[in-house]
Figure 1 (cartoon, rainbow, N blue to C red):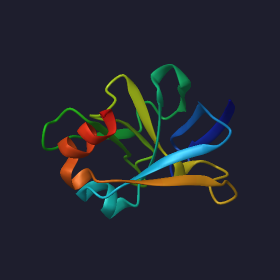
Figure 2 (tube, rainbow, N blue to C red; figure 1 turned 90 degrees about the vertical axis):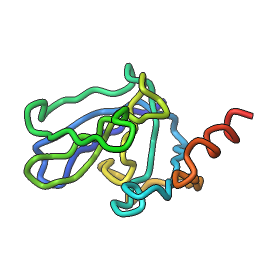
Figure 3 (cartoon, one colour; figure 1 turned 60 degrees about the vertical axis):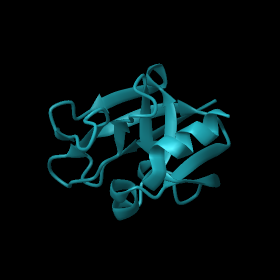
Length: 124
């Protein structure tokens, strides 16, 4: 396990996340992920620590209102959120990790446009 640091563009939000040395991320094609270029690194809540910015983000929900999308209220970047697929976990945007440009990530496509069917396929 490695501890990675990251945050939003303006630096108001900072976090640490413990994850495997070799990171596998999901590239979802749902509307919000596709439009923002989000790469999901999903970890248990205990592996995520918000270091700075507790009062500096805005929460956005849509559709089922289960996922809690946290955006920096200053720069607008969503560096992490609580996903519908893992309500006891955190999805970190791997592109918001400090060393993201230097890291090798295995990128796996996920069909978020057909979320229920895609989740069922993963469970099988």
